[in-house]
Length: 335
Ligand SMILES: C=CC1=C(C)c2cc3[nH]c(cc4nc(cc5[nH]c(cc1n2)c(C)c5CCC(=O)O)C(CCC(=O)O)=C4C)c(C)c3C=C
Ligand SMILES: [Fe+2]
Ligand SMILES: [Fe+2]
Image (cartoon, rainbow, N blue to C red; front, side, top):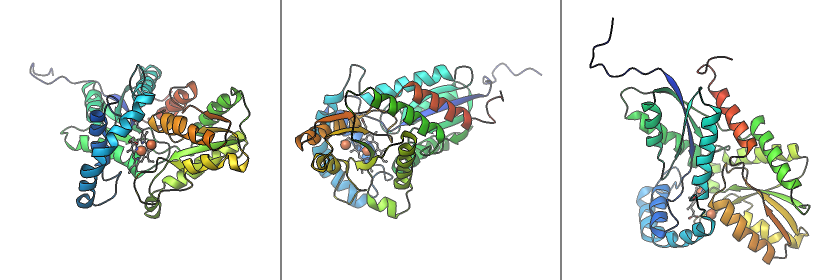
């Protein structure tokens, strides 16, 4: 029986993959940074302070002072292609689109700012995707990153009459594919240095200490990633947490404190990596690469190398392809 002429088009079921990262301002101006921070810091998964107490602090103090300071920091790392995080996310997405061509549609989105998660999902659905894999690009699970990215995906589906089937990529902090990608990538960069680092510091984004006490597995995931990298590289590593925000106690040791103490403790040649970030961004390029380096040198350090994040390196793209294809088991035809 043929369909009536006015029947909506029936599309072949297809698979969609949505790569999700944190987000970044559209330009390095105070107004764009204010827009971005207002969305980011209003997320109750990020700042776990009751709204009534937090709103006046956010709008009365933080959004009046921080945007100008942060815009200056962003302007120091901005590229011809825009914010480093946005540019790398685009490249990762293009590479994955090529790798998965004929198997899945690929889009990328940001939890805050552009391109939005809703736009990414709608594009996939419009392309006929009846099955979607959301891929939060955070190896270590954290409610402030993984959970809120997934929440945003679920919220888009909550408004749909005909929902696609949905999967979310689990955290991959101890996955052999991730550890091997990091091992190969870091070893290649260390071998290319013109000095032999005495210490390798692994700097993860910090979180308030109370999130650990409330059961967030993030700290544990970071420690396990670090142990596995250390074993894979066959060298001792230091672990620290960066980007402290606000007055509460954050996870320790703090990266900036370690960087100040190295030379005093006899380490004047160091390399720093940030394995929790799947793309270089303000936190790696400016906080570690500019301010971190300056404070290490000012405290007597001599050689400082900031190693690149996995970004769109061959190791990263191979790893992502394999993590994604594995998660699509039962959806992709068996090969
Ligand atoms: C309460 C504040 C914050 C929490 C909690 C937090 C957790 C967290 N963040 C990342 C990854 C990134 N954060 C980035 C920037 C950034 N982070 C905060 C605050 C918190 N982050 C702020 C205010 C900013 C903006 C910049 C600034 O004003 O200092 C970025 C970089 C974005 C970019 O544009 O380059 C990333 C990536 C993780 C992984 C995490 C918890 C584990
Ligand atoms: Fe952050
Ligand atoms: Fe920072």
